[in-house]
Image (cartoon, rainbow, N blue to C red; front, side):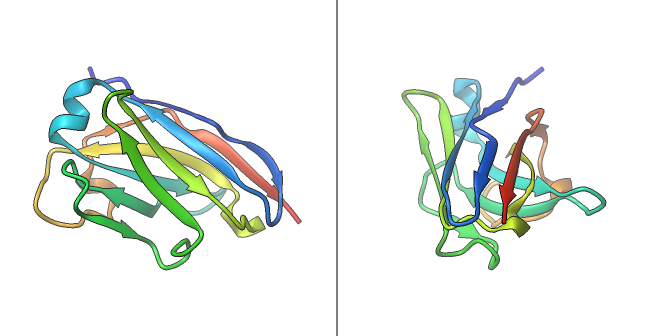
Length: 125
């Protein structure tokens, strides 16, 4: 069983920033593509950003491009999502995910094998 643990969520005013973290086993960072998804109440889980195991391929959803940045620290076995210029529409539970599929950009939840428990991000207007 792969355990992935998110942290860093909270309440922030519009225009503010938060940094989410996702801790995962070492083999995940060495072999898996990783990503952030989010799910707002009453909505489907949606793709936010993904980073390939080699760090050479990073891809963002249009809704967060230019505001969010995905990265990872292999030594710390932690993936990050720096979120700037937050908007009320960014309010959601944010999940980290890992996939064994390599060589392509993965943007749908079905393509991911492992998930964290989620962390709540609330942006007030």
